[in-house]
Length: 451
Image 1 (cartoon, rainbow, N blue to C red):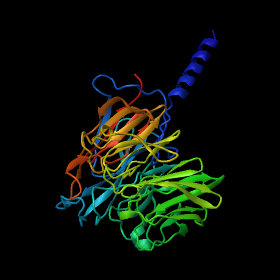
Image 2 (cartoon, rainbow, N blue to C red):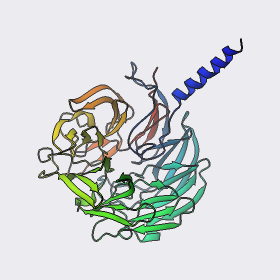
Image 3 (cartoon, one colour):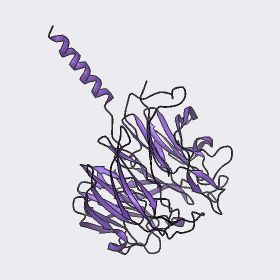
Image 4 (cartoon, rainbow, N blue to C red):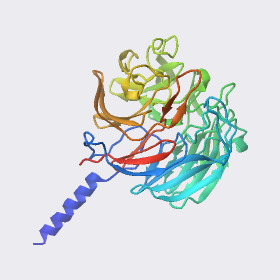
């Protein structure tokens, strides 16, 4: 009967629609909010751990991968023969090598193309690039650790245009390199650049400067990515640099409002989080602040009152790398010494704290970290030991469901502030019911599809 093949076709189409995979084309995912919206995912890891789809060799880097159109885009750094970096990563290097942008097949890990260029590093923690590639409309945008800004054809790797922020703007390289993830808004590619100007919007197709904004008096540009928010029905570009939180008009760079905040050691890093008419920000030394954004600008609701960044000195949240997540009336984030904390949004009161999620173990560890990715009613946490954790986070506490190690920590952490240990400090990508994670030696694709 004719209806049977038609019914079968409809069922196939319905199934295909249900299991269609999403991309992860930029920092924090498709909507830049750290939410993984795919379905058809496992509830717990199978016996023996999740299925590894492939592994591929890679050089050093802190930049997480981006996934789009069946391809994985990831960056790394390869030292030239005879070159080496200091054993103490706090010491600035002066080493020659090359930065690379690699395009891999998302199903097999096969390298489809590579774009590379010579790049001498002069920064501390010189492992490799920091900023996640941004993929949009057949193009890949890359910001290297020394200020190389490149637009590539996503299919071939051919260079569309290139700028160097140090040469073009006289920019000083930040202590820890150029790290602020690029932002695309319409035809504008927005990047932090230098002390003057702080931020520049480039034409995404040509690299031509469209507008520039802001000037710093003393600080470096910091590391916080430009962020888009909407307050009072008005779209606003939030630039958090070490001297202020500033809202700009996205199309022109015109200042809408500014809130002074001198952040110690230029450590503006975690992405600001919006909830309603409020904006939450957190820094390692200076703790957090919650601002209410009204028609006349910001009003401070509260700020941290801790005596320092150590666990016994902090009162709210002092994050170094983890972008916090706001769910309902509570904030979740990893504090200065690896404590996963829950705060009440309205007043910042700490509800609970937990140490094992970050990989810190039984004792607090300076800068111990985990990235938080929401998926449905649960979270995936990827910590600095290379562990992927499935857990529920609520005001009642941290409820771990399962844990699996994806790759070994290979990054070096040492110096006068912390005990030496190996770490993974790159944000994974979640796409096609798969997690893509990297360290300084390889990138791995691990299936998270329901069995």
